[in-house]
Amino acid sequence: MALDDITVYQTEEGLVVEFGGDGEDSNAVTLRSTPELTQENAVSRAKALLAAAIEPAQGNGSRGKDPALLEEELEEDLEDSFPASDPVSVTTSSIPMRDPNAGR
Image (cartoon, rainbow, N blue to C red; front, side, top):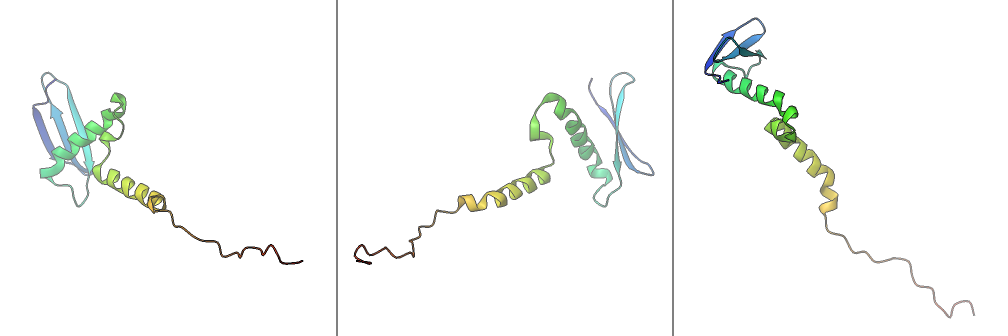
């Protein structure tokens, strides 16, 4: 089914993006109002949401995740593994050797 009819309209909750195509079938995505949500970016956000909704069924793993979330997870993992990336420091023992002649 080709989704060639896209309609964006305002509701009390936010914006609704309706994807229609051949026949009577359509898909609608409700995007709750946020300061970032505009009529201009509503269609791309709705498309991303639909893609994320079908992603687990296709088994593509993290591809459907928000890029900002992936970046945050990467930063956390790098911070958690940071000491492992430090070079090994060489230390010498401060315990003096025992004199073999002592105590005779």
